[in-house]
Every structure is written in C-alpha cells, then in structure tokens.
Picture 1 (tube, rainbow, N blue to C red):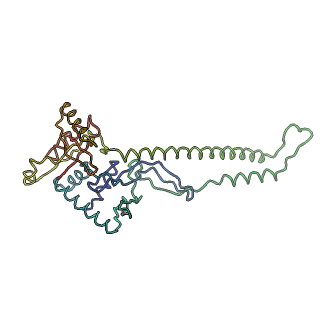
Picture 2 (picture 1 turned 180 degrees about the vertical axis):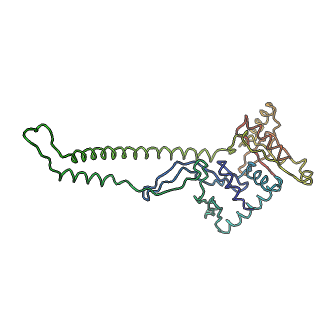
Picture 3 (picture 1 turned 135 degrees about the vertical axis):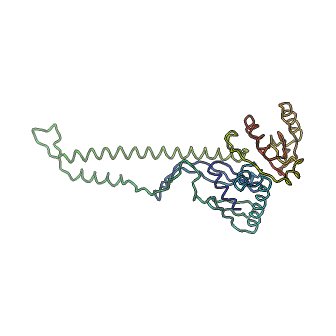
Length: 319
C-alpha cells in the first residue's frame, strides 16, 4: 500500500501524522543554519521526529488514504492495521524499517522504537526550491595583517614648512581608511556572531519547551474550518453490520479516577452533549466521549462542529 507515501504528503500540511497503533510522526520548524566547519548554509526546514506513545487514531491518515484510494473508511482502517502489524513484526526481528523521504526506524534492546530522519525532504513549504550551498569564508584577518605590514614599510616625510600637517603619500591615507573599515567590520562580525550564539541558545530552549508540550498534547493540528471535505463510501453489507455499533467516539478526556469521569459526563450532559463512558485506554485511564457514532462520516462532521468550541476533542475508532 506504500503507507509512507501518504504520510510524507501529509507532513507537508500537518505538524502531526498519527499511524494508529504504531506512533506519530511530528515536524518542528527550524531556522536556517550555517555549518562552521564546512561553511555550508542550510535553508529553513522542518525537523521530523517520532513519538511511540501517540497511538490513538485521530482519523486524519485513514481518511486521507481512504479518499485517495476511493474505498470506505472501515476498509482502509483494516488495511492500515495490517500494514502496522507487518512493521512491528519486522522490527521485532531486528530489521530496520526504512520509510522513503521520512527516515529509518529500528528497535532498541529495551524494545523501544528508535528513529533517524532521512533529511532528504524539506517539509517546510515556504522553503520550496531552496537548497544548501557552500559559501567561501571571508579572510578579514589576512587582509588586516597585510595592511599593517604596508603601513610599517611606507615612509612618512615631514618638511619644516608643513610640520603641523602629515605629508603622507596618498596611498598611505587610503591604507589607513581601509584598516579602519576592516577593524570596524571585524568588530561588527564578532558582535554579530555573539548575537547569533545567543539567538541559538534561545531557539534551543524554545525547542525544548515545544517538544515537552508535544509529548503531553493531544494533536489535531488544523483548524476544524480548514479541514478538507472527505466523502466516505461504505458497502451495503458493511453499513448493515455496523448500523447498530457505535465504534467512532469523539473523546472529551481521560481520567485516572472513575468518579471524575462520571462528573465529566454530568457536565457534558448539562451542556447538551450525548456523552458516554467508553472504558479505559492502555494506560488505565477512564475515557469519556462527547458522542459516539456508527457512521464515520457523521463522526467526522460532529468532530468539526465540536472542535469549534472544544479544541482538545479528537476521534477514536474501535472495532
């Protein structure tokens, strides 16, 4: 099915693409950088990372692939589950899983998935067409030393009539002007370099804060009003089998204690929702849904409407 092809396409438009039951690929924008040793300038880009703990299906990947291949949401969800099962089997055997234009994954000795981005694709659309290039270093120090030598070797003549005025030759004055310009330029360069180092420290601290929020957040990156309209097609047999099964849940929250989940249900009922308790997740947290649906299309439409006022809502599908 080449699932990585669709993941790569979505990374250009979204900062988080969840592969249900496997993990999430995340992107974080980074500024242009200069490699000091090779003098290579790299344009602004998006850095790709992987989070093994984000497993819940948010509907984005499955819906996108289902629309592209013109099949139903449920059928595509089953195909994604089969692809994920194959990936996990290969990793358990010690194989390295290479996803084109995304990166390479492998399993560590602690059975944790490790990820190395490929760096071949730049997912920052504003940098489209830009590529890295090598710049020649400016030899300011060499020129400065040459000016000093020239100044030492150039004679300066004085006459009795013009003792108060330096009768230097014209090119000596030019050399002094060049020396002053180079000295100022060198000082400015040092100031610029120090400022760049300070900015780099600030960016690294901000990146750590953003990464921390990414680990804790629930992702549904795009504003609900900007989500693409997706037409889902289901067969009559599948519709009949699932007509009474509400397998698509719009999650309102997960709670450590059941009493808190019950309070949340009461609050949502008072607000006019149709909440329900849908059990616990793999971490033992009690999950509450705003509403549940048997039809994937209705669930996505309801999710768009709920996220207008409830930004943390997300979609979970079960079988």
